[in-house]
Length: 624
Image (cartoon, rainbow, N blue to C red; front, side, top):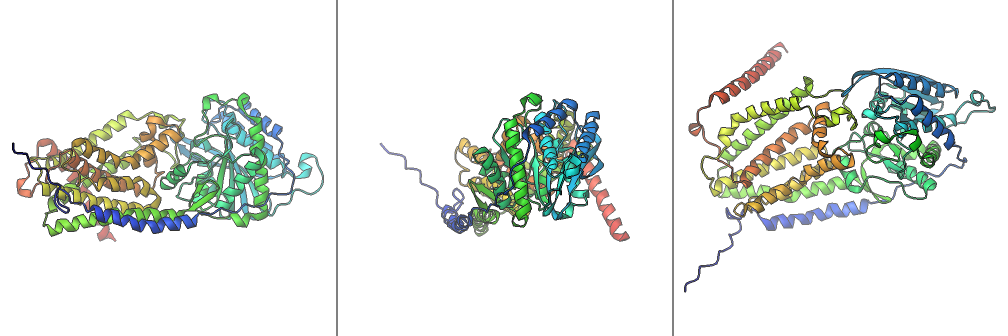
């Protein structure tokens, strides 16, 4: 009986096996050099010496002040009656110490609350510049008494200010405590709503250009282990010696290393700069700042935030450590100035520039392989024009969708306000604007009708057409990666999975649908990592996609990231069509069908809008 011949493996470089796997594997050897440099960059930061002055922080007084603030003024939402009374209360406390007290009143728009009057209260200990800021926000979300978040930090702030009081103001005698640097005690408003008060202080305070370090106290009366929050609004980190000193002062009090975000979490924070604490705007301005807290990446649940739940021991640990840290900074502040970027691994740090080199190096295997794939197409005379037309249509569609999102945010369809992260406890974080999102979806769907007819397959695509579609999309993905690298190199961690998974889609195009779609799904690990971070670390759960969209709407994310995301979605759309066998060759002009009534209407509206824009630009050019 005759036997069927065995199926031969496709030849390397053929349409069935176009990706040069040897070249891809070999290029990974070049990543060894950045990894070696990263290993040599690991170091242990220095620690400032401990002050010889005995601790004078009064834990009982600080806890009592926190309880009084929470009991007397439990609803301290910015602009409320309790908020105004709490402002007067803090101002009176500072004034009783004989310090120079000022009240900065300003207006800000808080998402979900509208235009609101806020107050920053400062008490200044005279000294030489640069200044050290000790701060705590006094407002809360209005859902409970706000004892831990953040009456506890405010109570400790007032107690620390008392240690620098004029002796005559507190019934003593002698000279006031002398400091080598000016010390600013700052009670901010709007801290529970993205650090609005901290951002205001950096914009308008007369001391904003002479700041050297900031200690933020937030939710220090919980039962959790004291920890440090380091993330900024930009991909920067506070000076490592400053952070190491803060950790050492806390360890002296608690006997254990303070908590910190994991190495992966720190890398995510550099890739997508975000924090709910008020050190973030300071770090973004190049001012080393840390938040000392007993909570996690998100402040504690407000419904359980009562004065009776305060942990006096934790307040004492963090308050005493803050006093000792302040004294250490006063003695050796010049050793801890500036910001950089790094990731903590235990007691050691990996420098940010070394991590960037590693991430850049990990681009190389993909870029070289994608360019080789393009060269093979050119040698085989595989036409790429049709595939480029399909990708162009997808890019225009997603850029239009991004533009509609931008327009909706500017027209007030989504909750608007200061370009600060909205509170996860507010309504804007969890109440999706269904009507606005439905309108956005409807407009985007109508816009999709314009390119849809040309992108749908009229016949099964040939092997060459699929190879062209893959090649053009992968080249577009390389452009996306380079744009991301030029904007924020750390953000490559969100793109690298798609690079190194989707480069194999041409290799598996004739395999089972499960393998093709699994390969495609592996490329979505980067965005999934971002959403997982928001969903788990910040307790947003399934509201994470809407919250990230709200950050784009408020302008809390770099503007360039919106069009870059649109480009990535366009590339992903073309590769998904190929993986699902729904890819069609882009038709030539003579083969295109006539537009239907709906598509004609949409096209007419879009061309009218673009025509008016071109006319205005020509008029401006003539006028200029």
